Picture 1: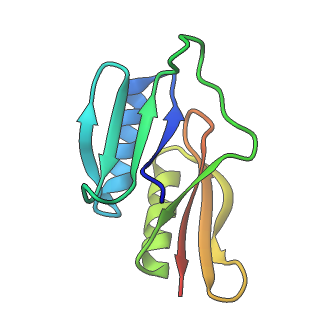
Picture 2 (picture 1 turned 30 degrees about the vertical axis):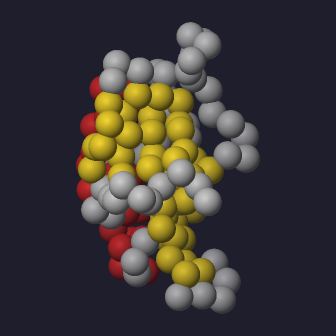
Picture 3 (picture 1 turned 135 degrees about the horizontal axis):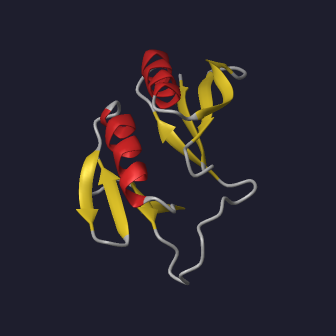
Length: 122
């Protein structure tokens, strides 16, 4: 159902480095790029994540209540992604751990303030 998600950035190079390193932990790599955006994916038929300069030319800002959830294959992969994000300078929004029956997640914000989550259901 979801084809891709876009997150605004004010520093394309910094965001590119952050997501290159972070998303490699879940097997994703750059799939498209221009001077306005970079996209990562793991399969042409799976959802992608983009960082993008806003089309209106204004400064990118975060959306209150907006979050991107990155699916993991295991609790260990959640831990890996969460720890990698923090090591890359992300801000903790809730350390990796159980969040109810069968749901395990870690929450963080990238350097532009966008909120992300790595999660596993199982």
